[in-house]
Length: 480
Ligand code: ADP
Ligand code: GLC
Image (cartoon, rainbow, N blue to C red):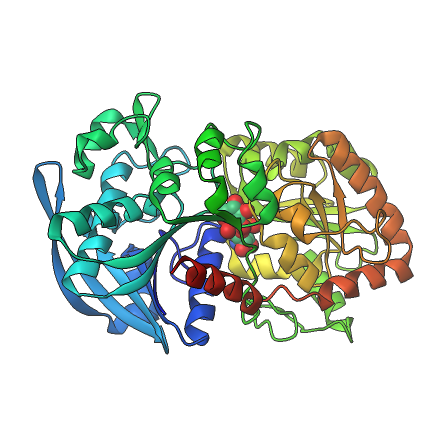
């Protein structure tokens, strides 16, 4: 099949979260399975500086209409591996910036224009380069209008640009909501600016457009596919999602085992596997050393790696501060994001400097070291469409403590509730729930034999993308 992905992030070129990992790994897995795969990505500064993009060649010059003005840009292409082509939509004014969406304080003010330009550039490239896609697969709000813009362009030019379109919701909390005046910049017919179209409480909503106008809609775990049809998790779009209930599938992400595998991970000081965990102890000591904690510490080490956002349950961790202060344990948090959380965690670390460490930066190597060096991985998310770190933890023999939501519920079995199959500890997404999980983790840590069984069981699970890619392949084939 000829499969075209459209996304605002792709590992290793631009990443703020799991979207990048998912898009990078899915595209790679489809290419490896012999599909002619393309990914469209904004030509951010960091992408253009990446060695893979050094040989990128200009494919097209673009002239894109936003309302009644034309904006120029260009498309550059490179191929990082067989069957995979990356198309960069280059426009300095929009994408020559440090971050994809904004700064810690606020989103960029021209995000509607930036990602409309991007989406329209994709459609225009499909047309001008005559790519003849079987599937155009758009991810999250920045690409959500691609399916609709594509069908509009087909009508305007009287041709077919793609057989089928797919829209994947990686996180329905981010919808791309903009003032109603932005509608004119889509150049779509006025009848789409109503309740059956993009209009949303007198504004316009990109994700609503993705849900309504893609041929198929998917999300990244079966549980989340159900959850987003309820007011509790639908973030105001549950009613819209329900209208597509028949066409919604929840396909679990996989993990990229070339990047996340403790047996070959070049970012670790030592490598290990389920057969021999000795290297894990070396990683643990190195992790503690790097954070200026006693490397010989023998009690439980809790790790957390995430965007510091409400979603990730940082409040639940803060509500359990006494657990970390009172017990003989260590807590290590790697994360950036909302200042209030960074401040609160920094303050907590200052209260117990030899016990609690905050690493407030984006650090790929540190994220691997935490996955390898911690005993327990904290992921008490309030909601979690899929979540990758709980899968990385299992692969690294680090026991995940997760709340029972979304993909966390689909990928972690509680070791107390199900002693024969458990690979982690799970609990309701509340402060009390986490408190219970933490308490149970102490008991598990004290029972070394059981701890090792649970660790190794997690390491033996297959979370690889080869499985997940087959599920997408089937979905594409079904839709065709
Ligand atoms: P989300 O996409 O909601 O942020 P996921 O669990 O799907 O959550 O993916 C998060 C990804 O981002 C993981 O690969 C995780 O290791 C990475 N990550 C988050 N924060 C950091 C950080 N500060 N440094 C390095 N990697 C990080
Ligand atoms: C989103 C979700 C996360 C998911 C990731 C990749 O960022 O928050 O749960 O794993 O996308 O699909």
